[in-house]
Length: 352
Image (cartoon, rainbow, N blue to C red; front, side, top):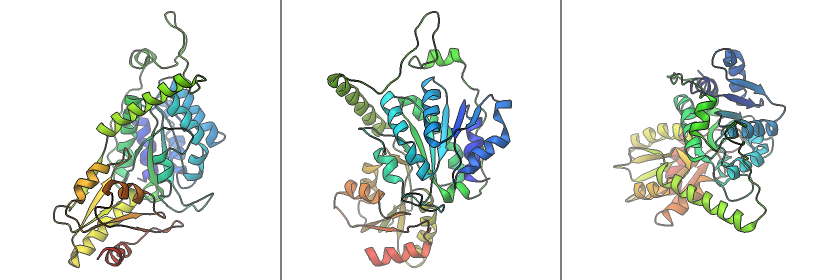
C-alpha cells in the first residue's frame, strides 16, 4: 500500500480515538482511506474533515487535552497554518500527533516532494521556546510503525509529536506489516493513567484546565524551565538513528527520509567505483543525534549532507562536528528528487 494509506490503517489499529484533518496534496489519501475504512463502525474512532487546518489542529488540542489518542495530517502549507495550535499544545503539555507529508515551497509552492520543512519541524515553527518530537520515516513500513511510536512518545512526555514524511514516502507503494489492534482506552483508564486530562467533572474532582497562558512572569519562567528540563530528558533518552557501511568508509553521507533511500543506491554506485562511502540516517530529527554523528565521523575524510532542500539539516551537522572535518551539502529544489548518480557526482566534486 501507499505510505499515506499505511498511516491511516496504523492509526485505526493503534487505538486512535479520533482524526481531524483537511485534504491537501500529497497527503489526501490519509483522510480518504479513513473515510473508506469507516473505523467509527468498528473501533469507534472518530473521523472528521475539519473546515480548515486551523480548525483541525484545535480539534486535536481539545481531544488530546481530554487524554484521547488523536491526530491530524497535512502537507507543508497546511502545517504552517497549524503552528499556533502546535505551540499552544507544547505550552499546555498536550500529547497530540501530527503528520507532515512535505511538498515543495515556500508558499503554496508545488505538489511535488520536498524536505524543506526541516527547520519548521525541528526549530518549532510557532512562538516561544519549545520543541516537538520529530520522527522521519524512510519507508512505508516506518510510516505504519511510527504512528504508534509517536503516540507513545507524545503521551510519555506530554508533548506534541510529528511524523515528518514527504511526497515520495507518502505516495510510494511497498509491502507493509500492519501493527496489531490495540483497544482504545476507557475513560476510567484515562483518569487513572492521565490525571492531568480534562475529561470532565466527576463526583470526586473538578475538571482540569490546560492552558499555555500565564500572566505572572516568575511563574511563566518556572514553566519554561520545566519544559527545558523535559527537553533535556528527551534528548538524553530518545535519540534514534541508523548507520550503514560506516566501519570502512572514508566518507559519510548524512540523509533522512526519502533522501536516505536514494543515498543507499548512491553508496552502491560509489563503492563500485572504489569510493568507500557510508550512511548515517537520523530517525529522530529532534532530538537530533549530534553526539552520535560526531562519533560516527571519527576517522572520516568528509561529510556530504543530502537533502531535498536548499540546506537545513546541514546546519545541525556542522554544529555537531564543529569544524573537525569538511561538511558539504547537496540538494535539489522545487520538487525535484535527486538521482543517485547526482549524489555520487556531488561527493566527488565537493569532497574528493
